[in-house]
Length: 75
Image (cartoon, rainbow, N blue to C red; front, side, top):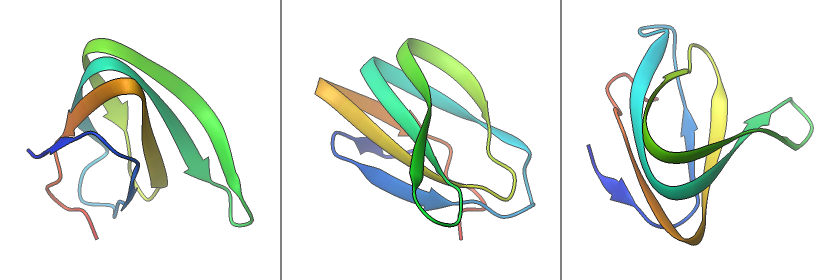
């Protein structure tokens, strides 16, 4: 798992329904709806299991935050 401190976009396939995300600070999660990005969630410090199957997600750390994500199966 790589540590990210800047905005990162991931496209997930159907291999895994969810994956581990570990946040230090606050990270906004947006979903691509086919036309534009829609903010779907804000993750705060700590680990979380996040649903990712067949989704295109944008993770945006705010205020010096960072995150790690299980990238197995990322397209």
